[in-house]
Length: 585
Image (cartoon, rainbow, N blue to C red):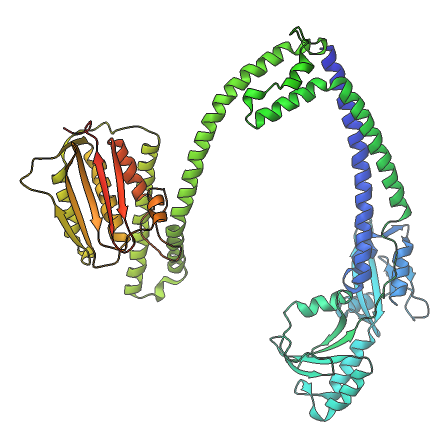
């Protein structure tokens, strides 16, 4: 108990102290990094991100505002100005507003007009209301936009039905060449229907958000754009102007404070590492030993829980426990007993997990398609059932019913497979059966099926021969016959002949299903009895769950029988089921 208390005390206080320090340092560094990223984003996307960064980086106290030098420098570099207005409309702080004829106080009418038009005199203005403090403050950022005014002037001078009039095209092209710019006129669908200038891209299509992104983040593109759309026209004029390189002020990514925090963090980490190594070596050797045991147990190495190296650490040459491990004598013994139990549990878990995965895969694979079809027709009927004809509704109902029948067949197959997979053995209800009569009734059912008129069925069994008795379950054997016959029909074209024969062979009862269809290749024969294998390529669509042949084999094995397959491509197939003499009457 003393050792336990000491270990607990050391590890707890270490964890608390160093976790607290790491959290504090991480939060501080994260805030600094976020602030730096926001500043960089404002620098390269001034129009889109300036106000949010300015508001978050401003501290206001008693109608006195403080801004970082980097924000002030960026505002001045961009040729913009900033004013912070209090609740009474008075400007409490301004940046780069000298000699701009800006008011020291705003009236309600002026502020409403700025809010609605985003302009003040000849400036383009963005505003943001900050409710962080007891009283709200309005941040106003303004900048000149001579390119927009020029574009409006050109539109008023040269536009004719939303396009550049033919007499003015050469004159406008000459003016655009002076700034290496070009004009693109777009229709309502964003397609370029007219272009003026040497670098213009004829026929370029603009996505709905592309113009907005290029307008708000011009420094992310090779050129900046100015867009104008007259109220009476359905066209949009866009001027592309190449961006100047290195327009923003370059500043180091990390400030001095950040470097100090990094150095402090490294020192704390090194100190924590040294102390942790010392405490770990002194107190944690048993825990490290157990960690190795847990790791091997996690990997299922239950027979190697204690390696030769571990034995040398734990035991003396005499076989007695070393002093530092005597306290853990019962723990070590319990580990061995637990390893034995876990070995058995792990084997059972793997078996159940494999079974679960197989069923989940099968259910997902086989139920997805019919459910999708039923759901699709359900949506169609739900959306507007009144517009469908009686024939169309009947067709939809037929498809839903067929898919429902298909799903019921799948569920029946799943249930049967589950019973067989759990190795329940032969069905309880077994009695003597006559194989030839049971087969004859099955073939007769297929012969009388009007939907199978394109298939010819033959039954070959000497009616004067002795009966062929077998002991089994009539329902399961009927399912075996149906699976083999339906498999022959589904996977062959119309016009084939399916022959069913039965008899005795070397004191064994047998029956066979053969056809003169397309046959099977070696890969299909090898995978024929694998669950969910249909023996078709991925482009084909075949009915059935893919469980039929697997069920057939399992039923045959449950009746102490076996299945043999003979087939060649183009020469048909023959599947024979033989029942051992132990089942015969």
